[in-house]
Length: 388
Ligand SMILES: NC(=O)c1ccc[n+]([C@@H]2O[C@H](COP(=O)([O-])OP(=O)(O)OC[C@H]3O[C@@H](n4cnc5c(N)ncnc54)[C@H](O)[C@@H]3O)[C@@H](O)[C@H]2O)c1
Image (cartoon, rainbow, N blue to C red; front, side, top):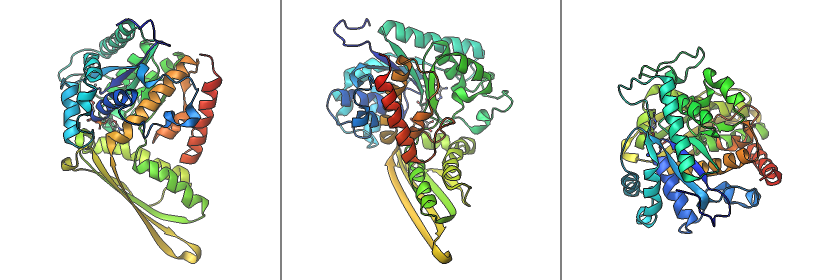
């Protein structure tokens, strides 16, 4: 579709890898709902005062599309999220036009079961789909955002660069998409703990690309809380003896994380924030249990044993009950807008200033949420004065 002549600025593409998943569907429905004024932008940090006049692409100017390996139509997926209590009744039909338009922009990804295509063929096919999306839409640019199922950590064990995907190819799927983003000239955001651009075979291409990128693994619940509470214990000079956590969740993410390999990838980020903010790793582990009946709703329980003055023993327990996709979707929209603007402003390489959003941020990002927020607001200031 050609750009509308009356549009104040060219439109921006958001290419979601895992476009038919819960998070992606909530992004697509939510973007349309907020742009149409049907709902307030609750949870979107980029809609708050420090981000005004930064030149971020307006929500109404975002065009959504992506890759998935399943073919369930988006309107049906959205209705399933209504049935699960994630989306309000009536909302998918109120924004049906936008949802159907995004559905038409979803291409079949890969590797599919029994896929015999080489890595090179897969990367080229994905990059061609993204280029085609940008060309047909007359888009100024497109940001590729990975919101596909978490890959098992075995695939993410990248020390040697020789990893198995089960499809006969060498790179994990998340890295094939990241390579395709680079090839199509698109900024890249990894909202999952999967390898993506962190693969050693992609390092040189990433730094030579001149593109901005950010990751990884969106920080939406338990780790968000840890990045606030960890610094609190450290600043109050209280001695944390043990920090244990349990997560109960269902949905596609719960099923994927039932695989111990995938859960290990997720838990590494949750534990890292404690080591970074407390100075050493306390006793205790994080467990993730798949409870299909909970659907997209997550309960995260943390039990923190700590010592006070004269060795007095105390415990803090927190229970977080959140709707995963509702927590994640506004962050995905924030990240897409900020990364698109960073690209427009000519920034390249990792964006540690976006560490506020991630469990496992790029090197150079602080670990405490307050410091991460300050860095993000500073970044907004940089964007405000950068070229448009
Ligand atoms: N609060 C949150 O929801 C949150 C926070 C941080 C990270 N994440 C991450 O976001 C991701 C998505 O979560 P979700 O709840 O939407 O999961 P989901 O299972 O509902 O969706 C994942 C989608 O990815 C697709 N997919 C799988 N392999 C693919 C491939 N090779 N190519 C293209 N698509 C593929 C699946 O078909 C599915 O539609 C997960 O990795 C999750 O860990 C979510």
